[in-house]
Length: 439
Image (cartoon, rainbow, N blue to C red; front, side, top):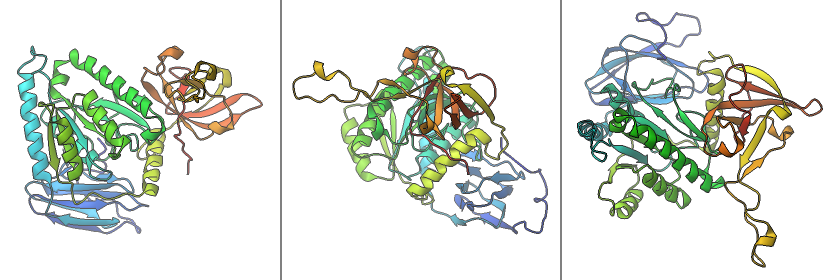
């Protein structure tokens, strides 16, 4: 857990330390905070009980939140918070949707208990499969974390599935991923990375290659089905699925695809009546699927495209250097012929001679295309596949990522940054449009 400081006493005083203040929260209220862009924030729970994203705050322990983080501290019974007075904004709200959120948790808890009590019945032993949907900036990730942390607090190990390639709650943007949640999620460090199952899409929007996105979603779902078949505990705990904020046109089609592919039993719609109505209409033929509209929190902050790009860049930096610059990535050099780099999509599906007269060849969205190593790869983030053979690349998950820092064309050498030293797990690398420039 990322709890810093000591159990007692304020941070060490210095001439530039921000002043401290105390905030008293009445029951069922929350303190909404936006951390400054250029400084971290220290705070602690002085008395009472409170939680962040569904995870209880430890009493008296100082928590350190990085710059630009946005979060809320909620209390069911009342609490006092001591914090530095250096936030971008902070205010107390007494109108929140938390009651409705915890009511959803209670219903899911009942379904998990019923599933656990029926281990021999393949249908009844399946716990709730919850998919959280809604437009951009409606609080989907936050609600997902709450539901997961509340379940983990009750002793369950639900599976978190993240289909939001634009944000990347489990790993880097441009990926879809799944991870078991065995403990309430750390409010600072987020989703643990011990056992994630990751597939690399490579872009932050599905419009680049929607067919590939569908294939990867299906591949991930099939792997989880096999895991559930051999693990009654995980099966009963079920899953919580976070989705993209892209809900119109293609986005809506991909949403329906995800609901069907993961066999979702509960659809939670945040903040949009129209989407809820559309989903209720199309899913009414599936009697085992409940569509529930929930109010989005007033604390949800809208983020513009510049902020989103900055957040993606920060996620990449954290992968290599850690949340608090506490990791030491390793720079390595490889020969061009030691690596095989591919991108997915491109190239004609069939030669023009095999097509009807007048027909134009179209790109094959699932074709593996070899990439020539040149200066265009500079600053790209590449995924390292677990594949041992080329024909396994599309169906293989990802071991990790490297960042290309230099290309020496005359010497045919490529320099890259990796989280650790040693040989890469595979020579097969996947390229998308994910780039990062260290600042």
